[in-house]
Length: 122
Image (cartoon, rainbow, N blue to C red; front, side, top):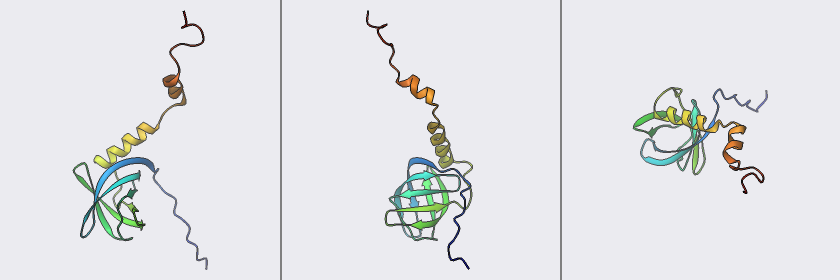
């Protein structure tokens, strides 16, 4: 029998964000920052709780429940038992995704000079 576990394919697209949150464990509240977010989970930097523990993520006056999947000294990965479909955290995810969609032509037009060549040197 093969002892290697096959990683599960992610069903949600991860998006880079910077969202300050408060994480509530069993005994304490810890400030952290979500740096990677999807409808199914998040990476929280600055907070750490034991793997398989349950926690609450407080943001925008609402609570999102989560289960810690992995944990290191100063960060952890959490899974949401209920997919994000609404609320402040979902709205922040949608805003981050909308901001990351930039057409190459938009970058060119935003950075090009107002004049080209010698035309503006009269």
